[in-house]
Length: 251
Image (cartoon, rainbow, N blue to C red; front, side, top):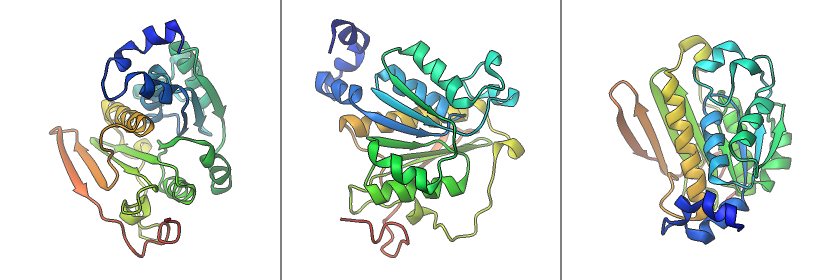
């Protein structure tokens, strides 16, 4: 690390669980962030501020005026611009050292299977069920840790899928792909602005812990927040032996 990096990341380096070695792991990491909206904004900003060496942002949408209530990586001046380019500007302004790749596309299964193996950790910050299932399948297939967040109305949830742990469940163990699922979106139901900030920041925290190798991840646990009462509920989720996604992909 350079003298400037030692100073910039000094508050991380002071932590016994991170130190210089942990910060170097962060600097050498590549995080793939699927979605540059409400969850992806705070997640990517914290990852950039922490010094993640390479961040790939993937989103096919453009910045809309209605996004600005909660998607803090974007500004009024960038309405109409692609979300990935807008977010890339915000990350670069925060930390010019971070290498940002902005991909304006929908992350389909083919793209994910090509790009997921290149990542240290993947963050699912998308807003639809089909994408979450595709991201989960790719991460399980390539044994790449995945942090999944969601927020709608006053409710948030987060979990970690760690395919390196043979006992940990994948997303499909919790929400089977073939189960009846009613898609809910903030465009029709609304979302409390700080809720996406809370969950996105937690996604960044879980990703950094996985990169450094400190603490205990949320693998095997689904953490849910009721924003009205600010009460947390933690559910222990076992791996499903007959899961259609991970039963054949485990070591």
